[in-house]
Amino acid sequence: MKGWLPLLAVAIVTTPGLLKAAPAELERARQLFSRSQYQAALTILAPFSSAADGPTQELLGKTYFMLGEYKKAAQAFEKATTISPSNSPYFHWLGKAQGRRAESSSPFTAPAYAAKARDAFEKAVELDGKNLEAINDLFSYYLEAPGFLGGGVDKAANLTNRIQAIDPVEYHYAMAQIADKRKDYQGAESHFRRALELAPRQVGRIIDLAKYLSAHGKENEGETLFLQAEKIAPNDPRVMFERAQYLIRAKKNLDVAKSLLERYLKSPLTSDHPPRAEAEKLLRQAGA
Image (cartoon, rainbow, N blue to C red; front, side, top):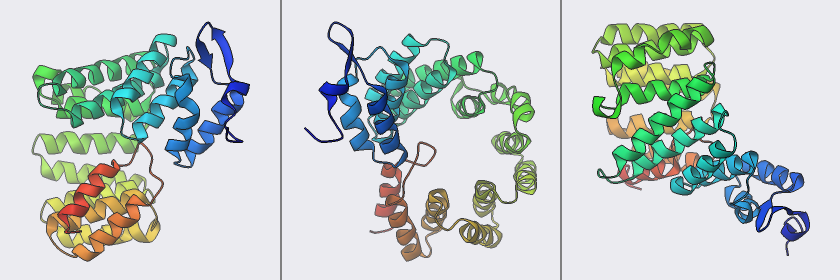
């Protein structure tokens, strides 16, 4: 038995046959998770997959999510929401897991998972109207999903007042996406620029504008902005991924794109970053 994994010694029996991770083990798993050591965290948490304990199920779900096991992640978050039915972050994570299941499943099963993601996002926002991450994901769902799955630009637009009250920068980003969806490209660019004006040191805002300009005939300005983002945050995984993706789509500087993606795959990633599978797919497209 490994020195840091004395499971039997630290487990607490809560009901017959049902274990609950002891605080020390749960904290150890959290530390491993924070260092992107997901498999090691799972080794600690897996024996407690039936635990009637919200924090354990939440961390287990996040760990499965980062390992790309979205079905198991969804099952853990379903347990967490059953244990704590008024916890907005649990429902938000359940929506994220179901959304990834929709993205990675067949056309026959994807709609059901997408609907479950929408329901979970809506519940998360209903429980906490200031949960900006949940609002943003619900906004994205409404914006991208077809009407028969409960999507719609007008539904997304109805959320912008909530976003504005919490984060004016994020509001302009949301408005830019709505304008783009409505083919108001000048309006979209204006909102992207305004978001950057309000938060000039946020590399995400630089990248948002760079991507948009590059996709709408302003490649030189877009490339300048990508280089600006790299200068500010050279080790930011999103900067690496997004610039590599742009270069591959533009079919230029593929060696640079390969190098960026290789660095990305070695970086400590979070749930806010594109999955490793997407980076590996781009690497193949670049000829690696």
